[in-house]
Image (cartoon, rainbow, N blue to C red):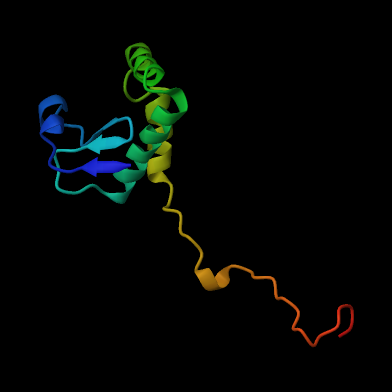
Length: 111
């Protein structure tokens, strides 16, 4: 996902109440930065684009938008759920279990 901050495109097409728009794997925003929750929200849209394809996703999105409105659009509901989830943390490298290899002078099966 690539984020374009201070995007002219976003300034031209986004209504004032929205902070970003996702087109494919790119996020466009008129702002200088986005919150972690907003980035998770937009990442959900990037994954939706990948899941449904470049031709199908926009058609489905706008169909649901016309039929249900913004708040009840299933794509937006999924993205809003994801934006409220805590960020995933990677475990530290030392916490990953590593299988110990026997030393050359150790016999197998004996302690």
